Amino acid sequence: MKSALRAGEMIIKEGPANLQKNIETVGGKLYLTNQRLVFEAHNLNVQSFAAEVEISNIQSLEKAWTKFLGLMSIFPNSLSIYTKQGKEFRYVLFGRGAWAAAITATIQGANG
Image (tube, rainbow, N blue to C red):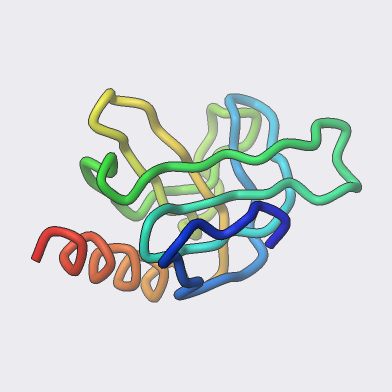
């Protein structure tokens, strides 16, 4: 992970993922820590950035469909994360059920 870990922060899960931003899909890697969900774009993209969501700011998550050009649903392999402000982060990834379970467990651990 390129982003620096914070004090007491531990990586729980990591793997390749794409972040869907409207009609664009950005490839990279997704990290789940005990404090946040971090997406880091890989260097092959035109856009190179990191996007993160604090675990405490996740309102909900749901399994979703990957959309072609942001419009047409083509494959059920995405996971949408919604923040308390209503922002959506849609990740295309392998094992979305395992990711959903790990994120849910992390949220519950942070609230418990």
